[in-house]
Length: 316
Image (cartoon, rainbow, N blue to C red; front, side, top):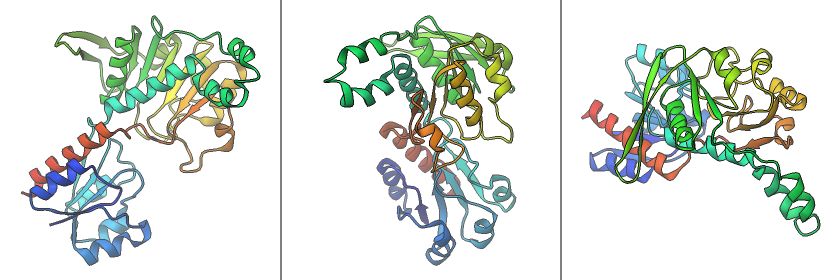
């Protein structure tokens, strides 16, 4: 049986699949040529990440497909319900990238709190001529320890992010309409562990209490954060969106930054990808990355082996 990993797959995933007798192709086929390629090569399994879409037309036109796999969590680029109605298995890897996303969020948070994203731009330009001026400009950083992190969406990624916050000495409050409480176990290098029980609270209370806010919700029709939500937040809040573009109103975010309500924000995802709005790219209060939340070597290894395990369980 043939597998097309159209957006790539880790070597560990390829090895696991090939050792089970599958033929794996990592050829990147253009979206408009994908149907022909699948049919001409009799592809059984199509693996994608965020770049390739799998819609009804492809599902209907490719009878050889038995499995559609998403390397990652969100499956908004796949017509999941329709595929399942047609008898296809649709799989993903919800746990594999959780810690990687959480670490990226905190990389942004630490950077914003200490102006690292600005200093890294300005030091090459002015470090030799305006050292004292830059030192003064960036001398009012804040510590994360003792602050409150609000997590909107307390699934696997939200919980992984919360664990990092707890390890950094932060208080964690969380909102999730589908979860009342969660137990977070922090494991340490020497075998010790500490358990934290988090009871979720209302979205409004999270917004009111938080010094830092991190979004971990799926794609949806309405904004999770809009003008009304920004108005509830503390003055000077720092916010991160490493979930999905479109869950945060970017126009409202810029307004909140300009008013001083928001000190800074981190965006790893955007309403318009792959061409984010210029006003975002040029805003010095934003710390930006190009949708790389799951892009660590470790996460990609976990994704590859997790996909391979599920494929083998279904087909062998």
